[in-house]
Length: 260
Image (tube, rainbow, N blue to C red; front, side, top):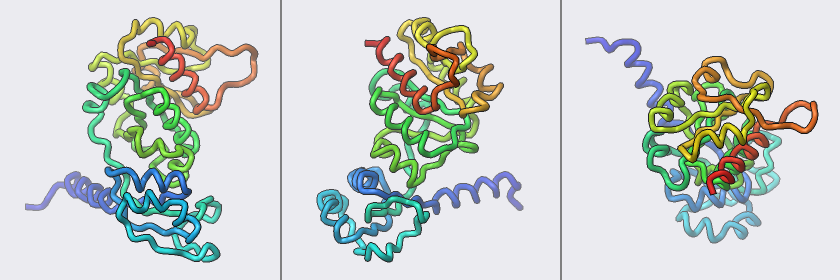
């Protein structure tokens, strides 16, 4: 019996995901990945200088590094990648199910959701802030979002190895699941009447999801409709708006401050 087309497509997607690899680069990103027991590591390319600097992490990983000439660095990186003589091929991390992480994860019940934030540098910076302020997860749609890349990992400065970053098939549906877990969903919107502090105060300490959209278009309509409240970061003047990673840091700080 011939398999339905949707079954074939799903199997192809599963095989493609299983074969996907990512090249991490830079001393900090590579060191943290080498120390992460959850990482599936495939190939380590380092210069002699980087080998000396990463000696402890390499020993902990048990990997056999390839020593490379810095003038002919063989890892397939973009020409502008600042690799510092270290590159590591890995499988993307598997953080498990959204429900498991967000319902009973460590720390305060705090989640960040990103709606079409595609710049890996912004997402990397948000992962750093999320880790600092104890968010259980950062979630984003599988399409139109920044995937796990070397540039994202380098900007995250190690946070990618520790801060769950989940890409979901449908962001609005994921937000609805959070709401059914008891989360209040606050969407950041520069034109909202409610301030960030007022919106956080309304949660009364309940689990909180902060939703940020891409710079320019902001939140999609479906995402806006799913939010319990829209809130804004108050500005002293009329000059523009914050970069999305800065807005996330401010929102996370306010959420953490109000809870303790």
